[in-house]
Amino acid sequence: MEKYIMALDAGTTSNRCIIFDKNAQIISMAQKEFTQYFPKPGWVEHDAMEIWSTQFSVCVEAMAKVGIEADQIAAIGITNQRETTIVWDKKTGEPVYNAIVWQCRRTADLADSLKASGYEDMIRKKTGLIIDPYFSATKIRWILDHIDRGQERAERGDLLFGTVDTWLIWKLSKGRPFVTDYSNASRTMLYNIHELDWDDDILEILNIPKIMLPQVSDSSAILALTDKSYFGKEIIIGGVAGDQQAALFGQGCFNQGDAKNTYGTGAFLLMNTGDKAVDSKSGLVTTIGWGIDGKVTYALEGSIFCAGSAVQWLRDGIRIVDSAEDTAYMAQRVDDTGGCYFVPAFTGLGAPYWDPYARGTLVGITRGTNKYHIVRAVLESEAYLSNDVLNAMVKDSGIGLRSLKVDGGGSANDFLMQFQADISKVKVQRPKLLETTALGAAYLAGLRVGFWDKIERDSDRTFSPQMEESEREQKIKTWQRAVKRSLQWNMD
Image 1: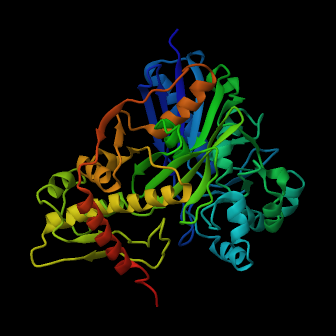
Image 2: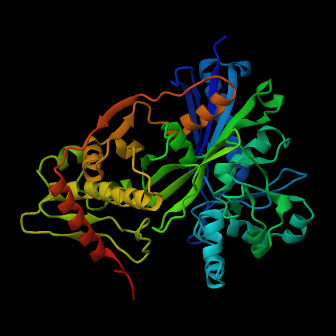
Image 3: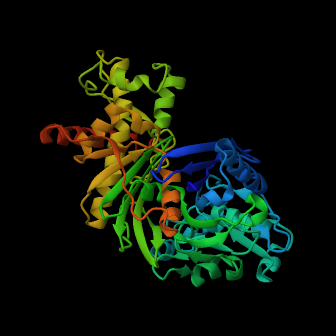
């Protein structure tokens, strides 16, 4: 009987189920969007029960499409939107409040008060994270403060907290294990990534009872069995990782210095730093990549706020391209940008600059500047910002960059990939299968149950550096001048 691995990809706007065969090829996929709630400006919520129902329904749909029975699923792997916070009643299994999404900024004041109280350095050293509403910790505190007898119920052990992975495992197993993995725990701002335990000092500062936190497991482990009422048979849940860490694993970044970049609306870069948790001095986040056989692999992470959204601006904002696919052709209609540089700081700059007051800047325009120069400058900006993060990773870690593996929509742009290779002086490898996040979860599960004994990733294309060093240095120098023009622009 043919066996398969099922990957649950629990995203921010939709849930997917992808079924992989022994050759890591997709044989079936189903996807369903769920509702986004915006109760106030800057607030973002999901209905946790809708997350569960849509995720389960796409599992059933993906299996039905190809006529697969439960006993043909060797294991399930889960990857999920990170930091999103769910608190539910242990007895009823019902959420006590909507899921507060990673994008939600409602706890900014609490984050600011933690900084003002002098906790920033301590929390960063313990968790690898900066104090920010982005992470789960302040969201938990908010929920406990805004539901009836929240603190009392939590201290009594009646309330449970989980990120989306924990919630899905709880629902699929009908509450038998209460568990998360190292990668997701490391995104809560409550987990000591060095001691590998929930941190008592931070829990005390935020008055969060430890009893409401899940057990932390390896990312590749038999975490649970699905209840047989769902699929007619118990299925092993054998792998879990947060989405960006799953993509790092799915890209085969198993060695120190391996890095990946996901070119989406923004861009997420992660670099494997091995068994060493690097304390970043350059505005990067230190995180756990995954845990296997009790051994943790660490990573540095840098987030770029604006990547593909700059191309959307070309299309929808100033309307000088008809589609994102046209940009590669248009960029190559000219030999260079004609001295024009674009800094895509529409909502400030993320790593490594962290300037919320920076704004989008187009500099070096002359009478000879045309739309092709501008399109090229926008594409090049994605590579420049990515290079800035990569340089910060190398500087912080002291580890040389081995390769850059790429995925996401922007990685299909051959011009951008070649320019990335040129400006970063590194080989850029694009895989044949771009579904690296779901594949990473599938690999974690499949390796645990012996479905695969090793992982091999086939490149669709490798882009090698071709630019002269003198030209590269001059371009980077001018880029840095352009960035300086954008910084602090929106200050009063």
